[in-house]
Image 1 (cartoon, helix red, strand yellow):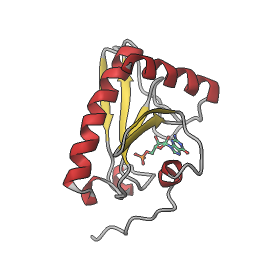
Image 2 (tube, helix red, strand yellow; image 1 turned 120 degrees about the vertical axis):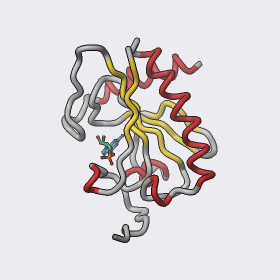
Image 3 (cartoon, protein in one colour; image 1 turned 60 degrees about the vertical axis):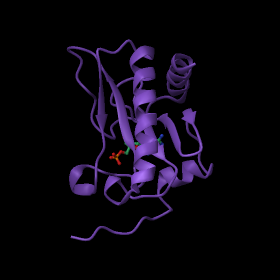
Length: 142
Ligand code: 5GP
């Protein structure tokens, strides 16, 4: 089945254009990382390529190779900042696979032994908490 084309009215495209705010932890010429507003665990961060693609299936190899380096960088910072036992990295392609926002992104979620994840796209986190979690990740990267 053919997937729909990229639609630049998606919420992450608006964040990339600066039309709506986010708690950003990293940005370079090709990629950006910010806090997920409905975290599945404290420190849940999203990493996106700036280049538009709906998901991984239509992304360019160049954009993928640039963004995966940032995924690794942010994952290490999140692990340090939240003293995590492990890091769960997730990426969904199309609604049937759980994708709800249609600009390619990777979820970076700290895991602690014995602690269950909260539901995907569950409860909105307080802005102050997101700001403090972003600060910890930025500090771990510096
Ligand atoms: P997907 O299901 O597409 O892989 O994940 C989309 C993610 O985006 C979800 O985890 C959801 O919590 C998050 N999200 C939805 N709207 C916003 C928003 O406006 N800002 C941020 N930072 N995250 C969002």
